[in-house]
Image (cartoon, rainbow, N blue to C red; front, side):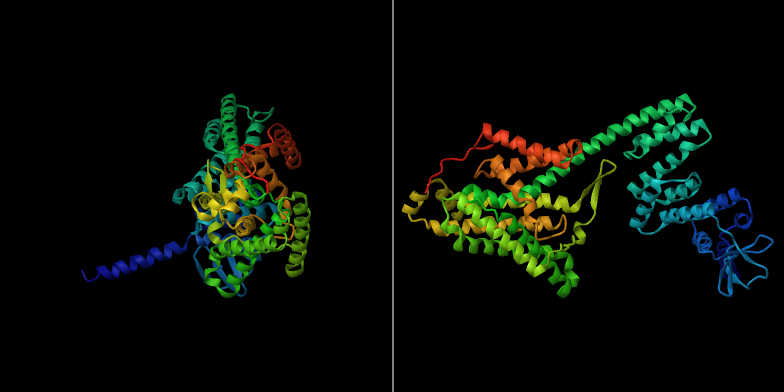
Length: 528
């Protein structure tokens, strides 16, 4: 009995030694030959082993570090050392070895095999990237490797991609039954790139078997239907996303223009100030708090609201307060202020755009319907827009400031007579609208670069939203913003971005001609 432990140890050593001989010599020998088909087939078979030793051999072949002896034995040479991949150990450098010649065809096969081996990587992101890369071009010779990866894959998304890859590769199988099964397996895919491949099977000289052709027609019908549904849902989502951006950009204007009658052409620059405040918060966290850099937005939101609101209060106290009841003068004055603000930003930050990076928790997206990716940053903006709208509604309808704002809006003289400080209410209201514009700038900074001209891209759209929704109507502003976002996203694929904008503008002009008060008419409003 005392010999049993020793036998177990010896067995383990023998198994370990056998495990090192991971690549059979008969798979390595064709690499040193002259038959191009055999060499490519050997690469595919070695890759199908899906072992570190196999990857090492293929990498050596790609790096021109694979050598062979006249009798066909293959070695990986590194300086004065030689590794025998059939034994898994270093050996003395053999005499007479010469480098294995690699032509373009073999090099391409090796590159494909190495990328395919990444399907076995421990990190999910690397495996997913490898599977998505193979979707662009899959070689039937890679099927054994893909099957090996599929056998040990436990991620649903990657598993589905691997199944489609196997089916795509089998479309060119010599057996008609295999091709038909592959076509039917693709019926559950949402990849529009498969449509040209299936269409080629239906063209003259493509697929000779009639049953396979019928299966391809049915598969194309299902894929087209799924792609159409995916595009519809994508347009709806991106329309809501664009509408949320327009809403955040126009909500502050709905207060300053809708409730106060101020045509504020500098509203876009208040958006820009909020975006640059976000950029400064990012720089502060990056330089002084790198450990919590991903949470700079929590500081940027109140900072942007305060800075933009403060700029709005200064504008109201110094310029706007003297121009109430004179809309054309406010238009000219605020247009001049917008030019001053843009030039000030160019002087401080430069004329070039600056980058505001998304936090890690806002990077990436969620995949739905098999292929539609909903970015986290746009989902966050949609949720943020909902929160801002609810907060504004509560302020206007459930607070003392909101009561005063509504009183001044409906009858300024009567509110003044009963003791409401209308001047202070005007200042706070303009500051609130400007602060909300700053929050909109935070949202815009997460969708693209920030530059001095950022606000000019949204000022016209903001006015269209406010006018279409009805002056001073919060509900109308929400509906108009979301409606314009949806219409724009559904028109762009058909008419193009420029024509879509023109069509929307014409629609708004005609609508306002028929209904000057917008979607919702405002309740009685006094004239100062």
